[in-house]
Length: 267
Image (cartoon, rainbow, N blue to C red; front, side):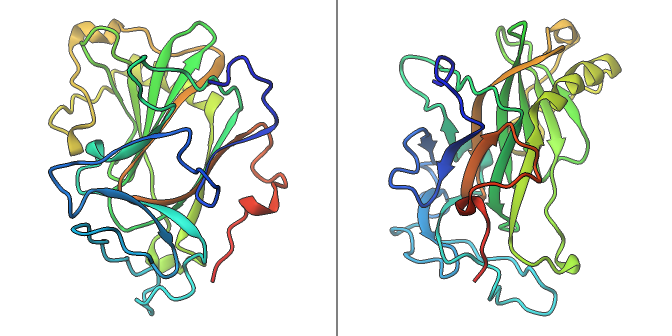
């Protein structure tokens, strides 16, 4: 999508307050769970407007051991609410999934940033990365993963999946907000593919959590994995359950000054 375009230092892929926030995304929900699987824009502080029936919002987790009301932890802004008990069936993805086949984002920035709200439920997101030799892999970050694993499928052309653990601040730490900015240095992820493949730290989990890992066979151990120099981001996929405010990429260090609209402001 962006391979042949001039790429500024900061590129915003998603903003929940823009006029067409999902213009670069496709979305999918689990049609068998109409009450529990949906994607909906609402005000974070008030959780209004409610989703259309029969959809029902899940309860909000307590973010402070002394206060279960969550007053003061939300944003007086429109955000995207992604909810489902089946992670792999409910997500947004950029580039959009089309009949013309997959397209690459082609974004070459080193840093990826996501502003998300902890909903107290299991959550995951995928990013596709490509090295300079064209070798492709998927990095999956999940709140239910306990340790880094590499999943390699025997299916032809399937991409290896590097599954990394992800955690939010605990209520006992008394966080100032329910929101977090997750920052990933994309080039630093490349070496983990070959490291885990060499250690045979392979995840066999077709029966794993939420069935979003793939099985592994001994013949799949020789599957090419990304290595060497990072090239670009090919796609991003955000699963349930979370609230999402912004996704952007940059070549600036995480502590660099960003436009004011990228900052988080509490109620």
